[in-house]
Length: 431
Image (cartoon, rainbow, N blue to C red; front, side):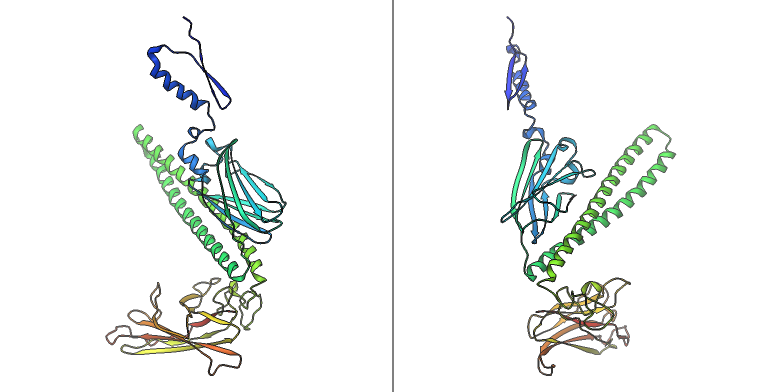
């Protein structure tokens, strides 16, 4: 008796199997399941777990000014490594910035990290994106209105893998802009650290590769050569991965630099300050926070003044103190103070000894905690305190008085006696 074929249809796709004898029913069942899987190219079985994670959004974080927006999308898997290659070579990620009214701006990216294809829809303007590990960062400029939310959709071919949406912060006030700028600077610093770590690690790998090549030349047996070639291949692969990491983190640094410039520009309107107005307000040779002005504690500091605090280190059994006083207009508010040394190298900011908040009319004494050896040397402890005063201050101003003390035990072998003439006190003020 002729056996008719079995026809299987799944999602509009037909597959045909030959009918099997009854004694092979169990085997036929397995073959039937395999046929269904083969006929379902967009199913979960088509992607390995790491690949599916690489397209599954974990969290989104970002912000939008009136004309620009930035978002960092974090995936559950290694997005940068897998997206655009292997089974994900036909993958796409769509990031849509949605304003309260008007056209949204959409960025669509496909292809491998080394040769991505980007499409922008909805509005015209500059846009860029960077893949780095599990994250995908997008910066757009030239949008028509502040984006209130972002929608991210990932696909493999025509099949949707994930879709997530989240609100975007819209910093407008100086406080909101400063917080967003702090976040951007933190990400910027982290990316620089990651890049430097990858460069150093790659240098170490290259040294190992050079050693293995020399060992391979000296190897005599086939077994030795085979083992060395395997080790060499592993080291080369790791070096290539580290090179990709360094490159992607470097690109992220550049992207964040652009976002920081946008935030700083937005901050100038509501937050013009003595330390960010591009004017040398106190007549020294420095201008503003970014110009290493010793009187600027923070970017929104509204006072460039600083004073010297020449502390004499105590001899054994003695305590010495020095007091620094700064006044500022009553329209300002003292919120911190900074005692520092000259920069450790040219082109670098001053090195901080004390960075403390002003939380009341007075405070202290507090122990000076520093990651290095305290400036007076071994066994000499240092402390500080502060007081806010109005009596004796010029009209329309009030002052901050900071006292720095050093104490040396009687049995200390440190002779002391030197004068620390390079210490300077600056106050952080807001208005």
